[in-house]
Image 1 (cartoon, rainbow, N blue to C red):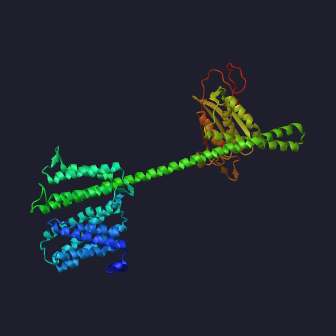
Image 2 (image 1 turned 90 degrees about the horizontal axis):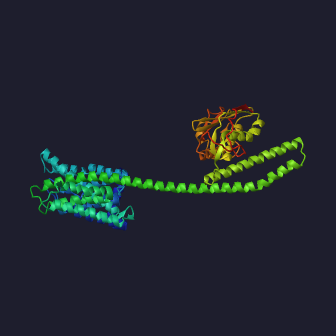
Length: 585
């Protein structure tokens, strides 16, 4: 309190020294002073019991919200001068200017603490203005009631309550109709919407809505008509107000409410509907109540709509950012795929003569046991490099939709046998048990034999790779309805449950204990894409670490008629059913 008190005293002292004020402060303070002089004098002139018109209350609050609390001395000076000019009693000149200054100061202070946005773009801003207005508007009427009691102007409690209620109604009307108008249009005086000029089409729309509103109000206030087509003009008046609140926004809604209030008040003094001296005060009080109700309703509607509009803009902004991020990711992914394709292709070119030279060395030079083992190791590593480069090229082709399948009728048994031959040596070197279970039925598929072999080989190779020496790898196949089911299982290191959903992600490396999978982590991703290109599915199962894993591939089958090809020369007639293969290697 001492800090605020000292601040206000210093602000008051600065007014006595105009040279200490900036040009902007002097203009703002002078404008507020003149506006309050005119508004307060107009309110005194239009005073008709039991209604009280106090336009200065709203102007004072708006001036302090826009110009800052330091302008309060201008408010006090204007209120004091009006009372002096109108010959108010001495006690009134002491009490009322203080109350009329405290009221807007408290209101502006509360709005500042509530983080009130003068643009009123949020529903909370409408509620803040209305809540503060209903509370602080009781300050002047309460002080005035005490003042009237001290001067013994009123004696009966009922008369005092009516006077307080009328006075409060006049203040709350000013704070809800005049203050928002000055605040909102003081921030954006032109045809702006948050710093952007309104489109010509929107300006025409606003002009039409206000023309309709003015026409309806003119008929209501200055003619004897009360309805059109059996519909009350009061209901028709609500239509343009709803349009303003929903379509145009808070700024023009506030202007519409002010226009309704002003024209209804003016209509009481002129035209066929003018009120008599006896009923003027009562009808004016009724208009005040109607205007307060309209302000509350349509400020809430406009606030809700503005908040929805702002939310939609924010959402569209986030969508635009997301689309931009997706485009950047797409470009980066395309660049990555192009890089992988170029890298794999360029590495294969120098690798080919190395492989050829190694084959010549193996054929033409005698080798000891140790040399032979070294050559076999080199050959195995070179084949691994070739396989990795081929996988990289395949992933790049699939990503760019350049990998084409050469489908033809094939036998699943032949595909599995060729895949087993490809990894049989690796299984034997690790002293693993390979269990093969293929049914007697000749299962036929429409597939690319090379790519389908690649699928089965990758699964068997992975199973052997992640199974310790002496472990077990099993492959089985069967028909279920129109689908062929291929299962590859092992009793190796297994897959953690949280990794099962990510197992087919490209370049994902699984770690288990101190062992990390060799390779680039693209084998399973490539396998899944090849299976899906064959209109099939693949899924992984595991009970967790050290419990092995199982991969299940489902592929559509062909009817069991006609001949098939597997890439080898075979008799075109349908061969007899082959015996069921079930063996251990």
